[in-house]
Length: 82
Image (cartoon, rainbow, N blue to C red; front, side, top):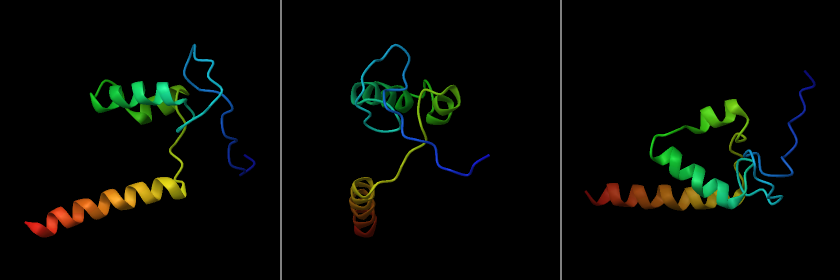
C-alpha cells in the first residue's frame, strides 16, 4: 500500500454513463441527483454504492462545509426556539 490518496475520477463512475464532468462522490450531476433519490428512498445506501465502485467516498470541500454549516446553524436556531 502506497499511502497516497486515490486520484479523483475523471468520468462518472456510474455504469453506462459517459459524462466526463464529475460533480460529487465521483459521479456526474444527473447521476448524483438520481442516486441521491434512491438513497433517500432507502433503495440503496452510499456505502453499498461505494463497495460496488459506483460512488466515491464523500470529499468535504470548503463550499460543502459552508452549506452544511449553514444547515446546522438553521437546525440549532430552530431547536433553541422550542
